Image 1 (spheres, chains in turn brown, blue):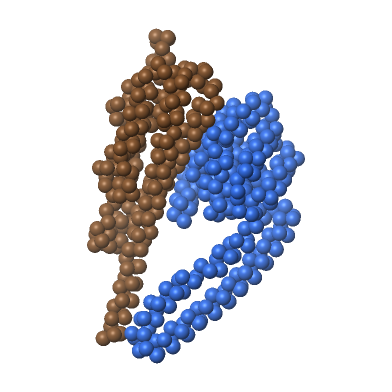
Image 2 (cartoon, chains in turn orange, yellow):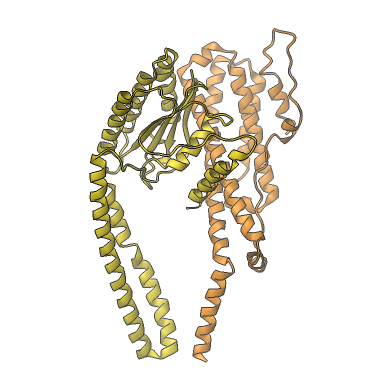
Amino acid sequence: MRTLKVCLILAGALLASGCGYNRIQQQDEAVKAAWSEVVNQYQRRADLVPNLVNTVKGFAAQEQKVLIGVTEARAKVGTIQATPELVNDPQAFQKFEAAQGQLSQALKSLIAVSENYPQLKSDQNFRDLQAQLEGTENRITVARNRYIQAVQDYNVTLRSFPTNLTAMIFKYAVKPNFTVQNEAEISHPPTVDFGSGGTPAGAAPAPAGAPAH
Amino acid sequence: MRLLMAAMVLVFGAAAGVAAAQSLQPVPKLESRVTDLTGTLTAGQQAELEQKLADFEARKGAQIAVLLVATTQPEEIEQYSIRVTDAWKLGRKKVDDGALLILAKDDHKLRIENGYGLEGVLTDAASNRIIEDTMVPLLRQGQYFNAISAGVDQMMRLIDGEQLPPPDRTWQHRRAQNWNFLPFLLFGLFFGSSILRSAFGRTGGALLSGTAVGAVVFLLTQLLGIAIGAAVISGLLALLLGASGGGWSSGGGGFGGGGASGSW
């Protein structure tokens, strides 16, 4: 009887490692770690925004629309709790994505507008902040790429045989992945406006595109 | 580990994708601290930079590498440089104190890519200042060597302000590995002995598990002795090779996309 129990325990352990349970655990953790890095970098960006807005305000207070746009997008990002569980909830995940995308757009138009203010552009504080923003955006890109890789590995494991059976028993579901943020923009050819000198063309279309998201 | 795998997949994927329509620029092999694929620097200038960076690494432990390529197209310099740093793994493992200064000569772009461990001192803003205030003016005059040399000097000065572990890494690795197996051993002892006890009775099980642990410890210490011996021998070999000019490698540092880019 005892030997039978021991054999059962051993067989169970072997089965658990053979059917990919451990691999699912590993990759699940890898996804979580990758996700934490993404959230971390998004948070870093959100922390930069107040400083950036204040600096721009000092030189270009009349750009109300853009400044308010950034502040509002920043506030919206702050209301979404980016918990690790978010990756298991496709809907919440999309909401998070949308909010971050909106902030990306708003920041882009802020930087575009700042091109029109030579004094602002040569301000050392603004230059530092801009460098930090660029660095952070790049970190976000890297973190997102690594998250995409991690989720891909995890999802492939979950869908392959025989790990898909294990996943079914323990109720693991495939995780949502990032999509291209500006899908709609890419699928339309860009409109180029050569006419009507005066107003800077680069800054105008960007804020209009932001609310559409 | 997963990151490493992902990076490998990316790199190999890129290598395999050469046949595809848009071929990415290949990542050169890391053979020395200064890699010039454009033939811009003279051999003497390369040696001078190399020596400067080697001295710095011996003194501080942080690894800085310089890479000159003609172009990074079709990728942006940021995408290319993270691929390079993922493949090269500059800096020490866990300390992540590596940095890459990369110039794309025909694109007129440059970038400083910093490992996680250097993000505190070599911040994005500081990297940007090095690029914009020091390097770009020199690059505009075509003074490539002076720009790189001055840029590297400033990077080193900033890194000097960071408290990093001392440069001797072999010693630390050995020490860390030495006691890694202890928790596993204890864990194994608990579980293994309970199984053995239930299977073979109390005395038999205890006897068996005791023998097993003894054997494992003997095996491990023997292996460790051999491993330490091998480490010492390979370390001596590396020293000898280092004296003759080769045998340098990176330590396995991680990068997360921090740094700054510029153009001239």
